[in-house]
Image (cartoon, rainbow, N blue to C red; front, side, top):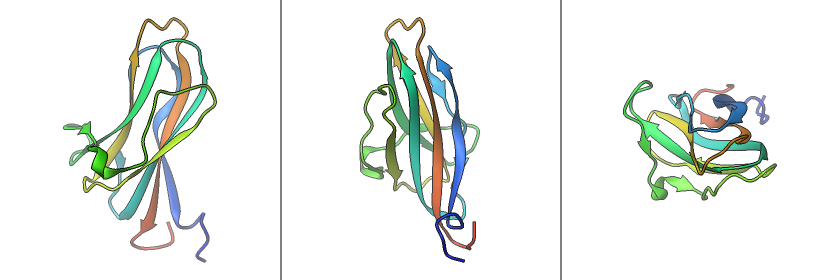
Length: 126
């Protein structure tokens, strides 16, 4: 069967929670996939500035760096309440993760999470 459910896979990078400091997501393995997208799902953001970005690495545990603009499809801006954002990844690293930098002096912070959507599996179905 060649429906969307059997051709995409989701992996959590940042667990949904309240954040008042930087949120460093878990790495997501892209081996076996030819496409990826990160989706940031904010709930209520009350104070502080929460700026999302995508990081990449050849190793699951170490060496993550910010993804170059040329390796992204779309742009990310500071998270706003109830406004999801997504960005495609065109880079060549095996692992990606979501990262949110928090600036200002948040007291109550923001509620959000992020997941990686992997697609174009080399061997279907997912």
